[in-house]
Image (cartoon, rainbow, N blue to C red):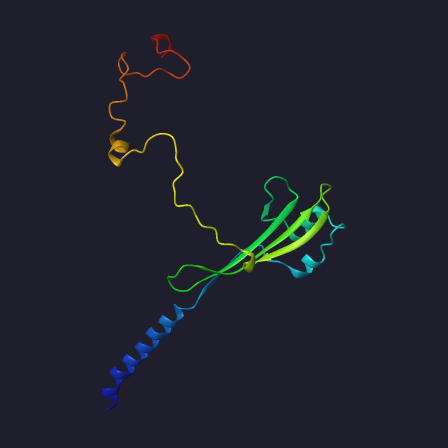
Length: 168
């Protein structure tokens, strides 16, 4: 009787292993990128007292700096989750903005979160470029016949000099 149960027990054991592996594949993969804020360092930044050097010492180099001048430093972080083969989902996002005056002193420290983000519609049009688009055949065979054989026995001119017998 016990021998009759052995194949059934093996089948049940295999089913448990397969089910646990299947459930393990549904565990989300969490990916944290960018600068992680340290609350004590952020609260210790005082407008009018701290400058760029002290902020760099406390927080490190910024993720990016404002485009036209270096009067705003941005520290950016994002957290995404992915389950199985689905696309990444943005679950948390933070931007710490430190503004400076012309003398390099802190004027304001502010934060933006996921709720402050805006969806931007991408333009599906192509950017026009000069020239023409080549087909795969034009790319493959376009250079055939473009190279001329030198008339002096197949020797190409040397860089920076002539191809006379004295220079060979």
